[in-house]
Amino acid sequence: AITVTIDGTEVTVPSGTTILAAARSIGVRIPTLCDHPDLRPVGICRICMVEIEGVDCLQTACTYPITRPIRITTTSSAIRTARRHILEMLLATHYGDCNTCKRNHNCELQSLAAEYGIDCFRFGRPEAPRYAIDGSGASIVRDMNKCILCRRCVRACNELQDVGCLTLTGRGENARISTFGENMLATAVCIECGQCINHCPTGALSEVDQTDEVWTMLDDPTKHVVIQTAPAPRASIGEYFGLEPGTPLTFEMNTAIRRIGFDAVFDTNFSADLTIIEEGTELLQRLHQSLTGESPATQLPQLSSCCPGWIKYIEYFYPEMLPLLSTAKSPQQMFGAMIKTYYAEKRGIDPKNIVSVALMPCTAKKFECSRPEMTASGFQDVDFAITTRELVKMMRESGIDLPKMPKSGFDEPFGDPTGSGVIFGATGGVMEAALRTVLELVTGKKVESFFENADIIPVRGFEGIRLAELPVTEVGPVPELLSHLFTDFEWLKGVTLRVGIAHGTANIHKVMEDIKNGGIFSTCHFIEMMACPGGCLGGGGQPIPTSPEIRAKRAKAIYSEDAHYVVRKSHENPQVLQIYREFLPEGPCSHKAHALLHTHYTP
Ligand code: HC0
Ligand code: SF4
Image (cartoon, rainbow, N blue to C red; front, side, top):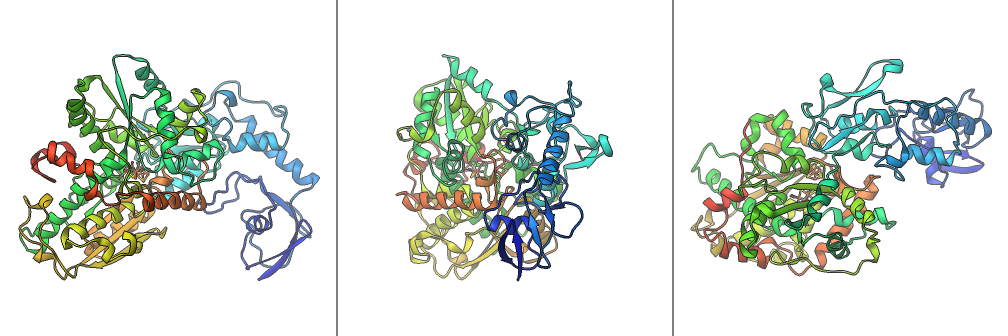
């Protein structure tokens, strides 16, 4: 450990700690722009410059490692002048008006300009845009006129996600961020996860805003506009209303959504439970075929299929492995199919007059709902997937102060939230929900007899790649729900289920390579893949900023909701069971279930 002095205060830190980290540890705030807690420091924006006694020029605090006792000054006239100069230079090339920017009040450049008292454009400002805005993609918009070249998007796309869509191109004053091959987003190799947006300090990247289209539908008296709300937004939306990350506002959100004018609000948890039944049943089918030697071509490990960013990733980079994907659609899409069939029938509404909106933490969900595969109801199953940020915008326009809303429940016939559904929003949640159901259905015993409180701790956590083994020591009789598919479970007795979890696409990449090379993950039975760090709670449509700390708090909220719900297992969700009785009487993975709830992605 080394003791240094920062602005006169002594602090002892391990050798190699950056000045920035040391300063933060004692509450000294140094401004940053290119730095981000998810990304490796690069020291290119230079706003974090500090003085080191005996060193001639200012040094960047984010990259300077402490290796000897030094005296650091973080504020002085020279430092303030330099920082102001940098901001003025950035503003000289930054085209855009804060008042009309989506990131107004949520922009790091704007905040720093205010903090450093920038009150004029000393070096001028662009009078016209230099670049055309690229809004060609389904999910993401790029406005390079607002880019400050911090490379946070490039690093998110390459380091966190290992996708390599975004890159720096050009030199000097022609330097700019572009896509690989300089393609428009519509044709670029982009998985639409939106991590570039979440990591952008300004308004250079944003989602395709569909709020105007949703308003138009809400204003149309002939339309019945419903919304399903995903698990992750409820754990984060409060951040935009001044609350700590991880303050769940599930029921306040329902009231707000009704005040905005939606005709009904449903919980995506319902279809998350439906997904678990379908995906879990499919897993048992694949296991049966493989363990009994019934079908040598059986494709294991089964890979989860609810994350559209991951689906796009496998389609681009591992198309030959597509047969490993579960055929189950995501909860968003299953719900979409149910709303325009089952719900329409039950309520006697012509499905062509139903507008199905989904509140998602995700930008890729916009792409997913527009995929040609997603029309099982005979219509586009989900019409609009809006992000947490877009819903907040609609709430603000409606004068809603969300935390002050009274609470209200979800609309029938899809019922109350369930624990198994809500944990989908965190990495490992899909796996835990699936295991709760599969273990109970197969053993006939309460999962609590294997895991205290039904918390399957081995699959939880934030490690980027996780592996767990669960021995099936006993089997029970086949429950009625699965009696059309199995006569007994003897073939599973004594088998150790091996499961994997990966989140953040760079980790998915490692797992896919491992499977390809016949490593340990190729011996797994089921693997959950989520494109975003932390799973959906860290999604590209979530409140900005994001960081490991913020994501951990959101996850805590999700697991505590789970612990408090009455129904915590998908196969115990009364509405889901009702739907099998009423609407899908042939059961999970039957012909009708396949037609509505499953799909095939082809290379
Ligand atoms: Fe997710 Fe989902 S949990 S992908 O992570 O599976 O977006 O929140 O809604 O569809 O349920 C996102 C979040 C969902 C879906 C669910 C799944
Ligand atoms: Fe969307 Fe969730 Fe996948 Fe991220 S992890 S791309 S938020 S579905």
